[in-house]
Amino acid sequence: MHSGKRFGAREFIIWTRRSIYALVILSAIPTVLYFLGWKFLSVPWQPIAIMGTAVAFIVGFKNNASYSRLWEARQIYGAIINDSRSFGYILRDALLSKDSGKVKEMFLRHYAWLTALRFQLREPRAWENMGSDQFDEYAKKYDIPERLTTLDEELKKYLSESELQYIVSKKNRATQLIASQSKVLSEAYEKGEINDFQWTQINQQLVKFTDNQGKAERIKNFPYPRNFSSITTYLLLLFIVFVPFGLLKEFDKLGEGTSVEGWTLWFNIPFSLLVTWCFHTLDSVGEASVNPFEGSPNDVPITQISRTIEIDMRDMLDESDLPPAITPKNNIVL
Image 1 (cartoon, rainbow, N blue to C red):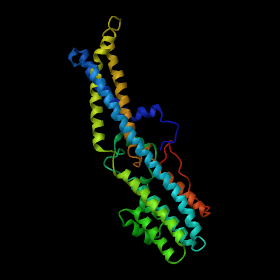
Image 2: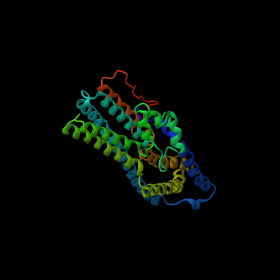
Image 3: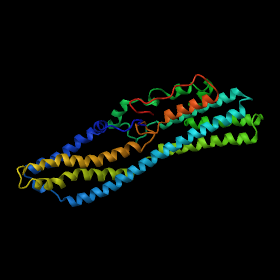
Image 4: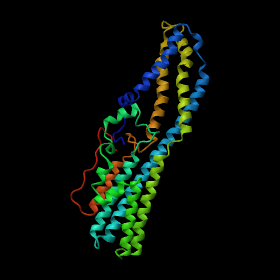
């Protein structure tokens, strides 16, 4: 997540510079050929304007869908924050006086669940963008914590050796950690350490965690539909290619009867670049938000949120050695 006031204009230009190079070439080729006498290359601008309207609609639709996925992801982690706090004080008040060791163990297992979930959500998918040059280069400005260490190393902080070996042997580690919580809770209920009401309350929190995990996994594992994504790409490409051809005659006529007659044609390059850059960058912005867990600067900061939850829950047990909060690097926090 970008935590600054805004992305700077320089950042945007650098981020899109590869596109700018390509757009300049696409604008320059028909302009040079027209100047050399290939007048037939000019096409009426009206059909291109109609195409631009269609592209604007479909790019706007994509950006709206991208924002919806991002906002839903943030709501999911907002719910995890609230449910984790509720889980912490309900569990503490129900069991601390009877078995403080079990409370500590379940708190640690919850931190392990948060850790396993964020590692699973950061796993790359074929449709994500972080592998492309444009996104990968910008990622050098900040750190993606899940790429700096391994899940096994992180889980060692919270789990016993035997439980660690059991959990890492499973495919979905986060799910198995919730299942372990449920098992320990059932054992406490059978021993009479918690009553029916307390068991129901704590179990409801575990169900909420499972529900929110499933929602996050749905966003992670189901991409923005490929048919909509593909048609947006194709229509945008057609529009970008044809814009310079539609403006050739208009800029050529611009200087008629003036001292710059014959030279205003070259305005076609910067103005075509400006128009096509706007459309292409709008599409790129939507693409940067469509996968909210991949590790881009527009993602939900799940690592920071997980650390915040851990700090809050450790505070509930009056622990003094709290882990440090995660701070932004170059205005980016994940």
